[in-house]
Image 1 (cartoon, rainbow, N blue to C red):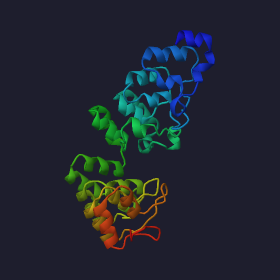
Image 2: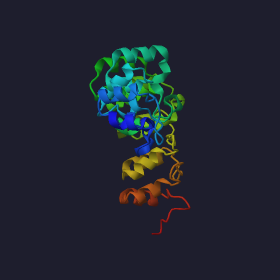
Image 3: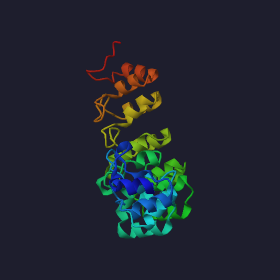
Image 4: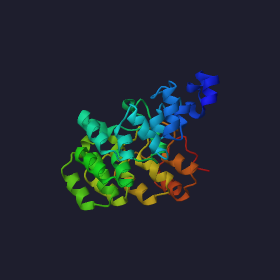
Length: 275
């Protein structure tokens, strides 16, 4: 690296996979130090994911992320949770308690959707801390979490008494639609409780996909019936693929789901149901 940079210092910002720079790829803290000392911009985002080097390294190369944090990179609660960093978690929450609701892809992270893959589709910093056994960080996050995250965590941990307690104290109609949709896609006991409490069966995620899309993809006939019986739109078109739940079932070879959706008339004018 030293020889290469001596010969061509402009390669510090050379773009590689997904438009990442060499600092995104640093395999050790020592390499990160070398690149930074040569002038590599510490928070330079990649092209495809708009994510910083510290974000890229957060799973599998956490010692690199720690070094970048020490050297002043931009931080967030997802990063703090993945590192199990109690002091950083506390500092970020004190600066902005609402940061706990920030999702990968949000402008508050500069985009930063690399977390979707690097943190294995975790739905919140709480899930990251819980999964990795960072109990003190988890307790700090839990104390700051809004009802929708507490509901997700109680459901994920199988704490249904706790779930019911939180649900009784919550205005379901005021919950973010993305979290309602997530809860409707969790265990069927959770979905039933949410619908009984008045949750919107047509709640969508940021791509306009409903729980019925998810049920169709997963060949989940019981959930399909539950959602349709609760008044779910039988043929919503999602905003990413332009497809109905029937189309999702067709694409994923979810034959039982496709048959049930057809039986219940849950298809749109573009769905080739006569196939």
